[in-house]
Length: 439
Image (cartoon, rainbow, N blue to C red):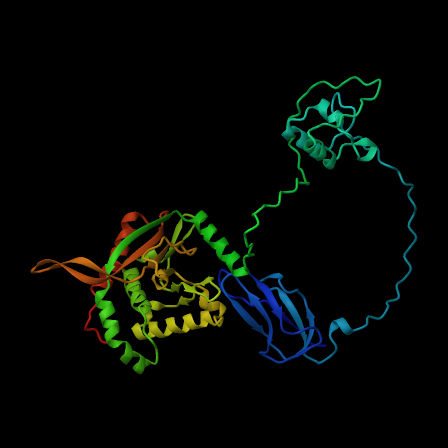
């Protein structure tokens, strides 16, 4: 029988595990080479895993919703068409009788349990800790009825005593002196049992919605980022009138020539890439006390999904793409994201992130850094406003297309001077856009 192991594939540098969403085959099913065997999910993207060989499913080693490390064997495929291992009936094996073992008489161990001075009975560390935390004295402990072995007080007994206000007071047996009133101190013991947490009450007129897997991952990444980086956000206003007029002038011809619609996003990313070349520390990550400055400029592009979740596909080597190349790459990644067609590699390796919050009407925001990067730029909505325009003939008021830019950066490595300098460079790049430019 030729059995081939199928392993969880490597899905990117930072991805160490994946969740099995659904098996497309069961044990005994035939499968062709490159036919989808299962669907998996990482913290970045969902994808399908094909079979590397043709044969019959011999074993599926994990269940749906299991989290599996990269490189682990997840299934076995029989390439000879022989019945899978689960259907092979093992033959009984004749074993040699074991040699007789000399009998050793059972010797019971004498275990002495500790007792408190002045205590009439033994108390477990858990009961003592609860008593200490609730301020219950040793004398009060002696009054609590015990339902455990030999009348010992259990966790349930002491909790009921506390809830009832300590009203149950059994008579102290004759011949026993009352215990000294000694307040217990919390003991440094390893308590394995925990007092059950109270179920939160939300009221009647509410809807409780369980977060889906992606939303839980996003929540974790956002909280982890805040714990990791010292976030600072700088703001700037930008006059993009030239860009708006230029795009309006060429967008129909561009679509006819290239077969793609040109949005503002490639124009903004083009400007960001030029400024990163001038200020390479914005294209870095932090490793302990080292700053890792990335030579490749890979721009993450935050994209909203129909579900309301967010994903960040990556434009690899954006500095090698012209405006047409950026437009085609951005449109391809955005469409793939919205149709759940992104590949794992499409969301890996970003060195700087741009998020266009203006597409949803926001003027500005304070974006959270996408770890392990050190900066993220938020682009606000473009609005017409009256502004003061400086000319050679003097100042005048004109209607201009204006927008706000927000740059969040990691203050551990980027000071306000560098952050503001980079943001101003992006503004200058956009405001100096040549309205007579050819594509």
